[in-house]
Amino acid sequence: MFGNEPLNPEGFNAIFTPSTPAPVAEEKPKAAASTASPKAAVKEEKSTVASTAASQIQTETISFDTDNFTRQTFIIRDEHLETLKDFVHQKRIEGQTAFTQKEALDEVLSFYFASHKIPSRPDYIKRQEIQIKERSKKNKSSI
Image (cartoon, rainbow, N blue to C red; front, top):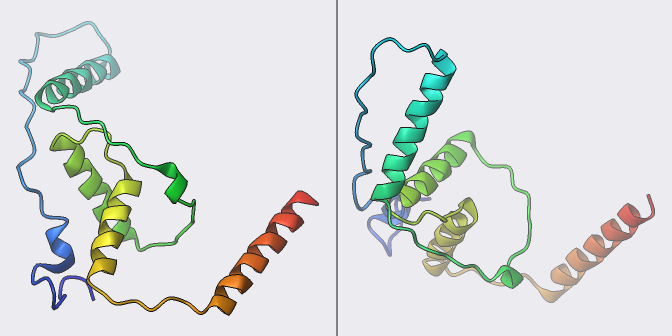
């Protein structure tokens, strides 16, 4: 299914290919034996890495029109979730610091739907879905 699309030889994998390598934080020279706790040392090291990485990344503001989105719960494969998180992480490293999983899913689904002709559901099915949703709302409000 993904990765073998006839309209795009690179397929789904083209979205997940990073365009630039991730910046690497410079390693801070380790101080002589410190009286600080090991947790404090780890916290200081993480802070240094984060500030170094932040200085190498250009900030980009991404805005989404939330009126066109609906909250929906999905169950997905563990490996797809991990890949999604990796993709979002890579986009943030590349400079899109506000990039989210929502935006990643929107990109992936837009790409997939653009390359497939998907017929619309019949109107009676859509009406049934609305009725079920309204009944569910009524049941929740009466509890």
